[in-house]
Length: 124
Image 1 (tube, rainbow, N blue to C red):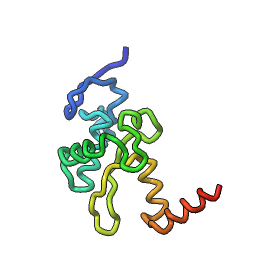
Image 2 (image 1 turned 30 degrees about the vertical axis):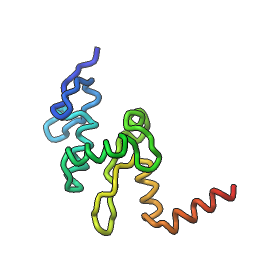
Image 3 (image 1 turned 180 degrees about the vertical axis):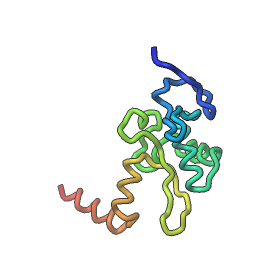
Image 4 (image 1 turned 45 degrees about the vertical axis):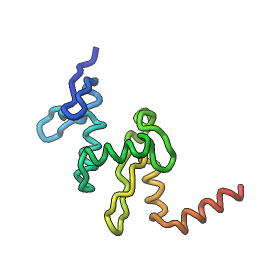
């Protein structure tokens, strides 16, 4: 049986494989991957874990665009909801799965480009 450990943030006991590796001292982090990702996003965008969780629950624990549930995301290639923000103002807009967040980035957050993509798809 694999070694397990408890996350210091969520308190859940999980396999060590669900904890990120600290390169600086060659140990596992005390936070599970899910909590570590949340903490990293919160620090980057200046919000608290409580604000992140409030945003998460206001969205029904789903991506604000595709509506995939956070529990289903963890089984996909892209493993979390990320903080989406306006690149000009820095204002937090919501939480997106990584796929939707990357898609918006590829369209440069442009409603014109997104509309053109929708029009293109409707042709077929």
